[in-house]
Image (cartoon, rainbow, N blue to C red):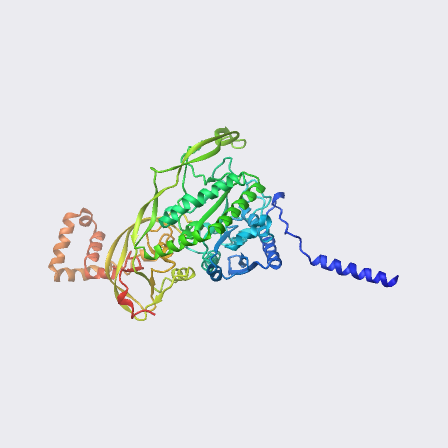
Length: 593
């Protein structure tokens, strides 16, 4: 009897130990209890999936401003985590980014749920992995996610606690994709280079409108695409995604609601995506980009569910249409390399629109309970439906001729660093040299009066082009344009670009003068010059006769003389944009390394 008891006890101990080692069939989420995952919980969740499934791999990528590494979770049918091998197998790659604004966390929970369901083969979802791999950034803005409070995004309908919008450096990461002031953005760029995703999704919440829809969608600006890619995007991809959300999930979507007039919605406008936004950055590499914006006033479980449904449909589409997606993207990449011109600014076409079904609420005014002011609101007791215009067509407003290469002086190391992070191939001059390059002089621009993202943004740039000889030094960087990062290069180095380095103040110091002159002793030198140069004296007298300001203002006279004597050559670099444009690189072949 004693021996049987000992055997029974050993059996109980062993089975209890094994039970303790077993994992539940699916990790638990609490979004239906109005709870969102913390960053620590999210990483633990994905680490658990990595341990349990051979198809899953959790990687630590680049460092963020929060002092934590950015994680990347990859799901492939055979467990392959090398993007080059995935592409060699003819599979599409979908990248999903979450928590860029951790106060908008539904994507964090929705992606985790989707990953768990996919790996568990719920509803036979694993069949999508035969021709598609899925990559997920669990939480992008780690610093914002670590700063949780029930009071962030205070007008949002759940979850109970949320993260902060800005990262540890107080940067809005959805304005940092190309200028990359944050370690977060530079780590993201490394991930993007590593994956080269065919489809990209960034998950958000919107408080810019109020209506009956839970999910609104920003799709990348179609005109930026190669024509065949644009047609496929408009006519097949978007129609199928919208259609299946409505028919398969009974969760009709609407394009992101940017209205033309306050009050009742009569029309909405397409989203002009600058390159500093996530989908704008993705477009620079010919990816199909999307941004879900679920409505802030809807309950959190509904927002998670809607985001999950869209992720499912996006992955399904990427799998079932992998060959067509890859073909269109390859053709777009080829077209990019062949392009001689590039559009760096767009304007909305007010003469073209599509019709869309809109389900809104009547707009009314009321007196607010605390301040007593009159304020508009959308009355949820008065829903309505209407067919409205959707202005989603854009025309080029600024096109540049693409040079064969740019030359960026060694001095601008922050620019070089960002070009490098984005995979730009460069060579350095081996010797000091003088080159004939196309240059820009900035005649005028409008600096912002208040800082944005730590920069005083430059806009409305007016400039003139001058072809001239410029001295460059050994170590200056020659940036050939005809390479994979071509769109990024042109977008960032053209000074009129709304997302470029000049717009973000990287080059502002060149706008200042050089030596200028001191009034002490300057006139005695000028007198000698005027006495020995009759033509200059004649021109000076003429200037005083024709320009009242020159005639009456001694300082204006000194400035005129300074700018019209040989000494002004010392100032020819003033307002000369320091990046040169090489229209013919043949002469450089023996001067770079």
